[in-house]
Length: 432
Image (cartoon, rainbow, N blue to C red):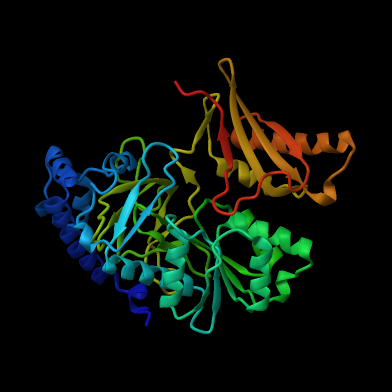
């Protein structure tokens, strides 16, 4: 049975719990993981110095590169006989990042994902289709275990085979959907081709994560699917999906603070910023056994809001992630986030929410190209009309981002659809 009391816990009680758990985690990491002992000693800190939550800022960060250098099991604090599950990142550069779970870690993961998937009001009467990928990627299994913990009936389709996915949604009377937002948009297009009106089905809500997505994308999904679209956030280095979740108020994602302690830092200096200021999210796991992540720099840009939510939950909220410090593009000296380009595109009725950003270099000059699909109803063979659309998009990007871009319009359904995380940026520039 899901315990809802923790979601409305009194702040003083929560802080006391967090400090107690933080001290235990720091001690375990220091005593069992050579990396943490060396790192703490080099920075002149010790777990005994954690007298308050504010003392955490004195401790060093954990970076993704640290995880790669510890490949595969160098950061585990439990012997392998206690590890019941391994997950890993895609490892597109260097070694993948590997995370382990004890039986208790899996139980915690199921708990936080149950909170996530029941935030909309879902319960044992619901049928949820999990279309996140299963396997080393944490999405599918995380959502699966959480849904079962919440008492839901699970349809474990994984990603791909979209026509079959839609058939099952229709035939099984699926009420909830979990997948990436880009895959949800792909489902919409295929459903329209098949003559399936998603608005006429029992499907009422979706839980979309694993990639940044704008409120404009949310609006598009909600209008075309006839559902409530909620954001969820997680990362494998911390636990997987379930770090934070959106409630129907749609005013930020509640962080499961009894398991994950958040900080916001200045990404340039590492200084902890006050609540309400935008910066890089840093997370510390305070209950995980196999793989304690101590002050992990997520690279995700957001801010924290500690005001009580209208839903009654007291757990701190984080804004939608607006970008990552490591996916920021520097175009002719201007900082540009892909999410900013998406926001501009989504304001244009003439195009579809499918785009790709290409960055190249001509000599010393950065070249930014945005490829975007023209909406079927605006698609035309008249060069004059297409040129007008390109000029409109280019002008909007220049006015909003202070950078010029080459706009390339492509026919509907030309840009490759993603079954998982969408590939939005292709940077062709050679790195020195």
